[in-house]
Figure 1 (cartoon, rainbow, N blue to C red):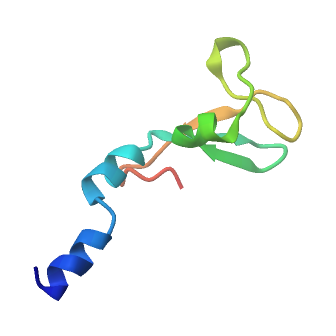
Figure 2: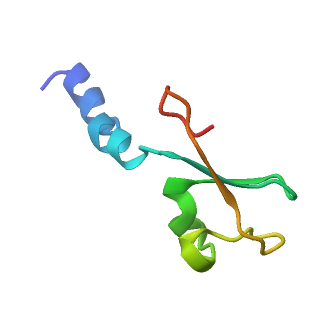
Length: 75
């Protein structure tokens, strides 16, 4: 095994990382300027309001969902 094979094997598995990070958009609280990507809602431990919409961790109001643009980024 050459040095390039060793270094390549140490890097992240890009196929798994890309699949895990696939985002459809983000939830926003316009009053507090809080933004949480849809794929991070569970990790953030946000409370869900009626209908499954997360609530803002700062003010407790339901957040609005905004879809990502065509570049598949929810930023």
